[in-house]
Image (cartoon, rainbow, N blue to C red; front, side, top):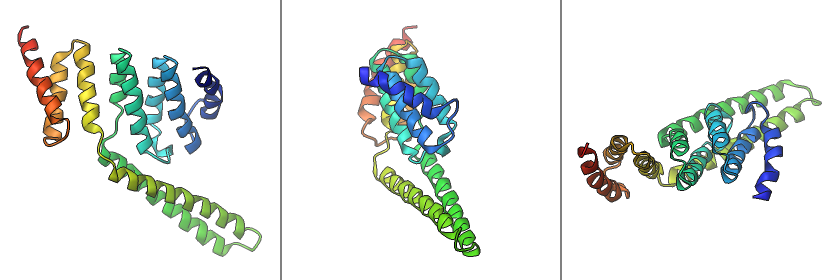
Length: 212
């Protein structure tokens, strides 16, 4: 916990008042996790909400979903159901993450070509610097393509998030909303590994709401 506290100030300085770079976006994920470890749930939620509006800055967009799962689970395990729901709502669908990654790839490819074309038109004193900038973009492009490849291979964690979202609603006494999420899980992932858990939860929860 002491190490976590020591990390707060430099991360807050890196991020500043807004998230305007890839390093700041990565730092925001780290800081949100630190806030969670320190029990500062409101700060963690607010920072993730801010980052969700700046995902284009994040070199590895899939890392955002991973942070949502980690932080949401931690909050739920510590009986902070409202805060966990706020975090789980930020989860991006797999197809949306891939679409955003594709946009990042297209943008970087355009930038690389622009730099390469500019280098060809520049004199010998300027061309090396411009080609160096193009090389940095090429490194970023390779990183994003690798993260997209890994993300495509990884199992979709949306069913698990839906299951935990339903649990948070149930623990808050919002049982109809829990039922709605269980049904959504079964509709979207009828053959998923969480199917039996969702069915069991539905069977257990329906009689409870019918009592009212």
